[in-house]
Image (cartoon, rainbow, N blue to C red; front, side):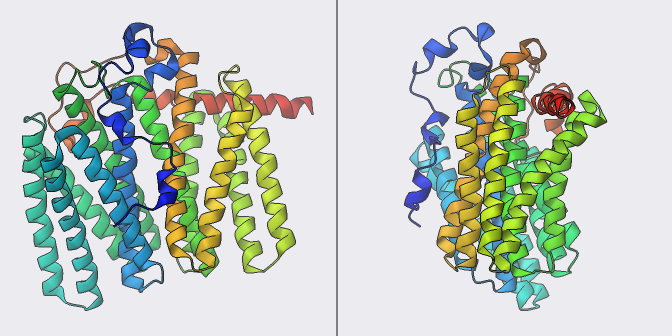
Length: 452
């Protein structure tokens, strides 16, 4: 399927997977003296970020496709198109590292495994247990074949057994999300969806670690797993997930769907993850302040949805004005929190893009222009990589001692979220620090409130 032009505008270059030799030499020649922005933007970091983006988006879109297929939803075909575009992007990424033949092999296997999930959906609709079992068996065969493919491609830096274990988790999560949704256990369905998204970031971590070890010169001897890159990857995860879940909640709100409350709860759980990280470092007050601000901006989107349902143009305009006020205020807080490392004007422009993408995804969905809907969804998902990169760079620059590299002595042998992935680096340290920038912002808010 031809990639849609609107998606081509996204500022994400797959060519960064294998940078032109020496292209970043002036930035990364001395890795021990990197600034924060350089430490989170190495060639290896770009690889991990791109894989995390595309693999997690695959999980997100796959859940959408399976759910839409079961419901016979009007946007089913458009969701399939978006998932197909994601496959093309992933295949291009593999091609850029391993060449045309490997890219074609990857694409064929990847499309097959998507097809087996569709077979499961179709068999479920037909109430055909035999076909459901056949689809699961085909997925089992696929994971063995695909695991062997990756083991060979990485020169056995990843082991097929660990890869197969991770792939089984992927299958269980997508099937679990689908089965739970049909059983109307919507809370469980969205829990599985969030697990599937998170799991694919673990896949990206292991796979990028193997690739950079395999081709060190192509990645200028930089590493895909460092505390600084972990920070960026975590923000990639939480912020892209926010965009994806926000779209779903808005759509389900417009439809008055039974799962709206569960969709909103999943979005709230994403907010809780951000807020809990802040509270664990700076205390409950800072965590609650952040949660209030973040929840407010989600609330303004909900106001827009409600106004659309009521056909109230004045209320829609008010919601957009509230979002405009929020982005200006939020941007100023971030500039202050980072001691000017991030500029409020640029931040406000980025937040405006976020607002426009979510509103576009919603408005086009309501208007029945589903191709445009999924263009906007993919743009919104990808766009959140930009604030993740900027925020992580500013934070590392602000607190460099907290992000000194602590690399493992041996590379783990799994790239698909298996048990061996747990020892890759100092994740617990990073998790305790990842959103201190937001906590700092929360403290600024408290000071502002006290002044007022």
